[in-house]
Length: 213
Length: 213
Image 1 (tube, rainbow over the protein chains, first blue to last red):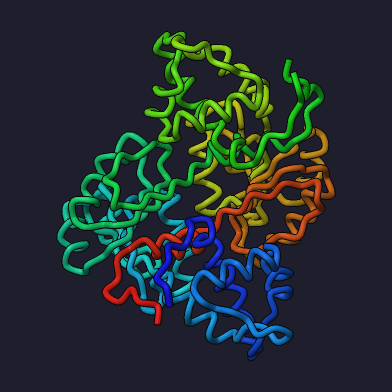
Image 2 (tube, each protein chain N blue to C red):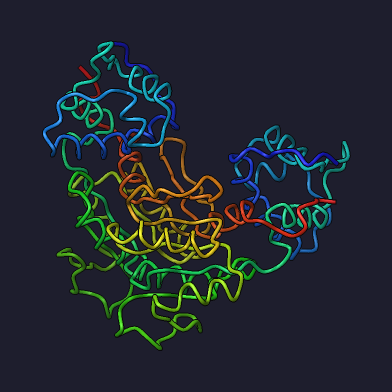
């Protein structure tokens, strides 16, 4: 099988397929058509067939895809065939929400280390994970070989946190701070910025004066 | 000027341009080149010129774009030339984090109504906005003509909340619940799902066995 490069946009659809497939698996469904996957995910069946073909999953015409095989392949591609540990930096409201949600939601990507610089939080747990001081960050991440991190600190502190994370071997960062991080090319950064989401969404609301001039 | 349809991907870049331009404006910069905008935003200058041309902003060759005019045009396109009110449904950790962050971050899109079904939270404020019971939701949104909402409730409650929001005239929803919402075609929904972000990001970490077969 060719080890071809899968486009970023397709990678972002794979977890959506995975979620639907896992739900089907729990209902003991063995086969799924691209049309049914389209209905359940909201993507077109053409798009789905193309995405799945990237990693050599070709459905049987008139039958469909094996749910179990698709689950295994997608997990393997996303490196989710074993538990992925994630470090969370920042245990404010946002960080706390993520850690709690993460515990309930799924076990394949798991926040297993939480860091904050507020001494009042030390020793407390969020979702059974102890909050540790920032001084422990490098040691813990190196020791456990953690490769992913979530940054949920104020904007002014984000770049310094990112530098530290990169130095200790973090390869992928989910950044919730409203600031553009400078990181080396081998580090993947995904930014989620509430302001930008809200501002772009405002475009789709009706306005009494839509004329631009 | 043609009132042409701007692609969704370009719309999502406009708030990033806007943020950089507002910072430049505060430093009394009057002119910006596409090359400088590229450096500050991370997008290519070719992409930037193309995006800005969608709404008729053509730079002067060898000079650049007027910072002030670009700010006004982008605000106008995004409906941000006047304050946009947003209703937040769900005042848990996530909702609280957004409301606090929103107050600090910017004033053009503003959370001005917060709803929850926990009676213990009633009458409390987040960032100077009072938490109201769900029973008040329809009345408040209709009365104030609010068109945007954030859903930060557990997955099982999200669809019911979305139905209510659509019924009272909400046109754009930012959905943080890990569930696919069914909404009519005229309603824009942007989903932010932590699981999906983390799972797709895991793809970019190194693995000892990258072979897929």
